[in-house]
Amino acid sequence: DDRSVKIDMTLTAPGCPVAGEMPGWVENAVGAVEGVSGVEVNMTFDPPWSPDRMSEEAQVAVGWY
Image (cartoon, rainbow, N blue to C red):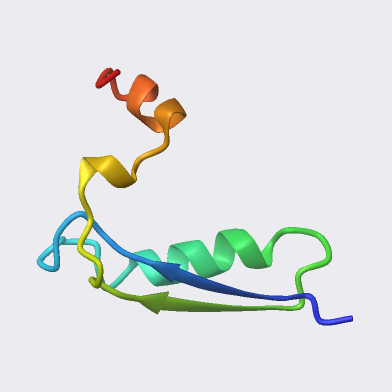
């Protein structure tokens, strides 16, 4: 049973000041979940991020809904 996780993620802007650190943070957090055997984080900006990509819950959390 493969328990590895592949994550495709984007940031709000290609020039984000944490772009170099964020994949490591995500890899460490997901890798700490019991049962996960490996994590691969792939950064992509296609399609570009927009507020429309946020869940309703996330929009409520930041006061946009």
